[in-house]
Length: 550
Image (cartoon, rainbow, N blue to C red; front, side):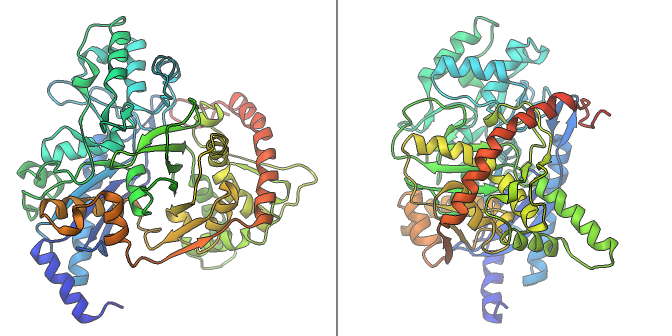
């Protein structure tokens, strides 16, 4: 319970506008988080949404973006009023983050040329392969440059009309400020970034321009991409039009400082204080990915690994899996229906808690069961489409505990395959910090993740706050630097360690040898069973609207 004097202090911060607001557009939820001067969460708001599968493309409409942002912001304002008796009209700083990568292409008039193609789409194979070979740098299927070049290869009518490219965070930021900019972490998911300059790699840009010119006449790629900014820089001010777009009630005042817009990978690193070399984080949501800050460049190109950057521009190896906790969510929903059918009262949190607790009682190898969480394609394992599967042999031990453990293992399976590539490169990891809804049940997903990656896993106070809190912290960093605050003159890592996380409590779990041995057995079976997944994709086609054909 917050004491009355603390409520008064927080109310005063809201009225004075010294707070920082972060908004993140995730895969299933748009969330806003308001923090005070030291990063303590004060209030939140959220809006649930889902991607749509239209004409063979995973997308969100810009109308859904606008409506979702407005609803999320309104709920945040309501929460502030409910707790502190005032409604905020301004902030010390504001930041926007969102799902990385994908393709948002606009013409010279600022009109969207084709529906937003999200990170989940895997239709860019030829472009990604050609660009990877050309650049000597892994270009994943979901990167913006892969989508852009694939449109050129496919001679899509809109390709000659593209005047600007951006990400979802960059689009929202431009609506709020009028500036076509992007944080370096998010920019590194559009095109390779040179860690030395903390800007796009201009030598590689020239190679792409030369190759694209063999297919069409048009502007150079650098003319289309957003300008790159690093954490702490001034990324513009909230315009009157931007304020009205976010808050149509007219209460939000223009002039608020904005930090560089970032991707959810970067905000996850901030939220877990994992921006220093030999540290990293795992973010678990609709997708799941691990970020490891590198001490040196990798020796070879690996299709399992993206090379991106922290919000400060330091090189990071990223293992990005398209499929995360969605299948686990679906099974939790089914078990919740079963509980209701037998007359039990169980909230979603009750069901998830029961599943996770049961997982700890399962056999360390999952009892011979296999679970594939592939709702979408998975580039790391070479699958353009996915089919969720639970597979067992007649000798498997089908119990609730083994089923639960296998579902958690299944969420980490592809991630573990990618992390083993990093280990083979000799990348050292002192520890990983985890965040996302899977880690709200203390000690379960954390313990099994430690077994999956073979490294200590820590969970802190931000485990449930996630990226919205991370971008709020980045907004606070920009605010403090603009004000010349002494604690903000240092680099981002020092600012986080000494100002934001100075008194933060974390719980660390080391890998349990029995769990490690069991997961190793499970992963060997999992890798072999990918043949079953491929056969399921071939045997069970889907329509272009995503519904199964029967």
